[in-house]
Length: 173
Image (cartoon, rainbow, N blue to C red):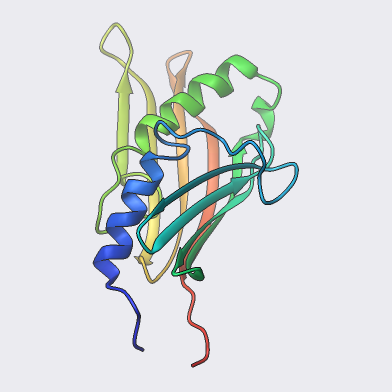
């Protein structure tokens, strides 16, 4: 398989693009390609990135990278706050703020979502949130599940779970 770009260039662009999107300082597109979706867009030289999702407590979506206008990589994700926490706006806001921090610490060797493990301490030095990413594969073909736990009444409770799958798009010659 011959690609028109280096995998390392794709990974470097993906890491940079994510910081210009949901996980970083990105602004949502005013006129998304998909009406009703929230979208982030970033372009640098021949690469373009678009993250598109709908919903809040459950928010499935897709990231797509194009090279010279042609789609070459994608990741689809689906999940969110666990059903027993739908409607808990305060917990969701805290959870998503933690998720954004987590997504700023991606391992370049596995640039799918966040690191394998990440935690945040509260003002007393106790763990308030934990992020766990269980995945298989590499940037060319992967799948995984990310989970966020929150300490509630002295116990670590799963509050967020999301599945994801993706990799290179290989077209016919």
